Length: 491
Image (cartoon, rainbow, N blue to C red; front, side, top):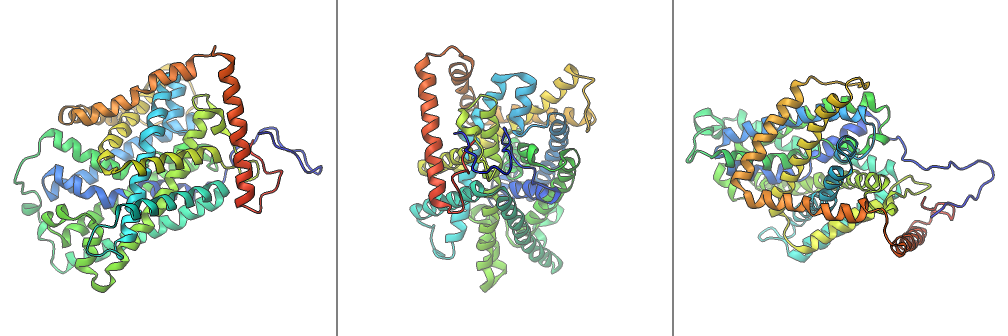
């Protein structure tokens, strides 16, 4: 929809772009807020189950942070060399071409980000409802309804203002760090009081069974779900103030901080719970609070809910930019590349992310999809970092404000190949489904993107549909936001 100028005092710009409103603090909170969501409250159980011992589980958490650091250093180079929003998708499209980029985009939009958002939203509603239903699992419909309301509310916030969305991210990131800080402090007090038997080396590394290499790979996949989001600042590069300086700085600050917090949080869990108690718990943080906080244990589900609320906001903010970038490149309908003229927010892309998440919420249980999501995530990371090496070979003289040592991407790719290889060996069905999800995008790409000479009626239908949806969005926002005026159209 074209904008209509209602002012003669100034000439409206011909091109509406996203605002650069993300400084260093907001950049750090985007990374931290996206990483720390539901993972640290869900994954400890899976990591312990597959690793076989407390000590080895802690080793996996530390190594997971180290691997995320290696990957993020590579993404820092890519982010300032190819300064486009869209992260993995934009880099792979630039380096390997449209098909590879589209497959990453397809899997992310169809399954990866909606499922992750749904898992975080369900964790939010489960912890919020836990005090209301202390002796039983919260009702199925209640958790779904509350999750959907939360996603809808944050979608509206992100549609209304970039500044409001980033402020929410800042506040809730501080809140979630305080919540984890409470767990860590209480756990360390337990350790200082001598309650660390499960953490002593001879107990921590005692194994009833020696895990197979495949089980270790699955433990890393579970940990990778908790660390997923370390690359999300690259999805909003165009909105970062001075990205050549702030992008790498935010990475250097955020990833080590999250690794330390995750490791100390797991130490706190094991200071008060035996491995058997942790494995039998459906809500690790709630069980921790009930054991150590007494009448104040209600603080724990509320704190977790605040943490996941910020995680939902961060995922909506960044995943909508992925849809926006895909549409701008012609890989998704052009409607999704529209930006609100006044607020500079990609409203259609946000609504698509919101709708896909609610659909996944309605389908049923999503926790079983964590391994699918982690596998697709790692596949995307590996292809992107392989692209960094290919880009170095193809354009050796290109100016790179940041240029990491070749040891960094090579080490990451060696670990990546081992992890995916053993994952395929131990869980061929899970990995096979992940690959099938990605490959379903091949016919979609050739029919929707590569086939340029479509019949005229298809283009006419797409154009009319886009116009009607634009008009609907315009009317909807005039109705729900009285501050909007007729000049605030979508462009």
